Image (cartoon, rainbow, N blue to C red; front, side):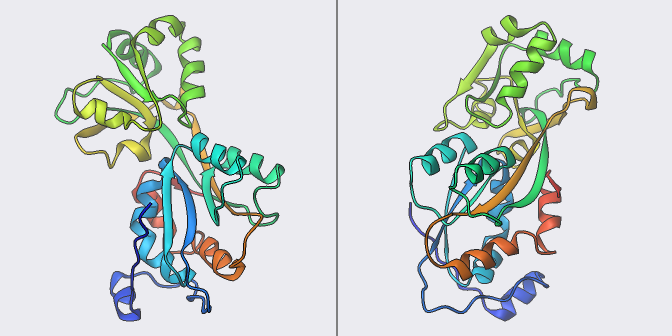
Length: 258
């Protein structure tokens, strides 16, 4: 992946309005930090990247993907400096000795929502009965085969007594395919995924979150690799994710800071 380098002056940073962040780390090493990031928090990371790099004192080499795919890479022994994944994945990697002990940070959580093609009629999903009717009448729905919310959605369909019906009309997408794009192109009627992944999608509009009675949240956490050098830079970069300027960005992108 191509590494993008940013140069942020103190004046420019002040103009952006990010204050109270950790001071940049001075270091003789200037190589980029490799950061693996779940798609669920991509929009947050895209926005905070310049200030995050300033806090780390070096560029960040960001790679986005599903938590499942990124976790598999870590388990295979691929090098990384920081991982931002679901809390469940971080906990398992910590248990397996892949995440540095004591470095785990809770970041935010996000609920599941439904999206439709921009300009299309908004479906009714405000109650459980309305959601069932919408799913029953839907021509097709899509979500990532290995997405963080996939397991819960399968359980919800079974709970509704619609497992076979939904299996027949669901388009599961591999990690190389953007489910939102199928909706924007009219190849799928609805998408069910994290609200944070629907809001920024071009050509897709948020119909709303799942009803509270059946809502489920996916939590995100971060941690440092258990191996590697550059501990000062990695620690400073991790600490920035819990600094005061970041919480409002999580909120603006549909996530609840923790």
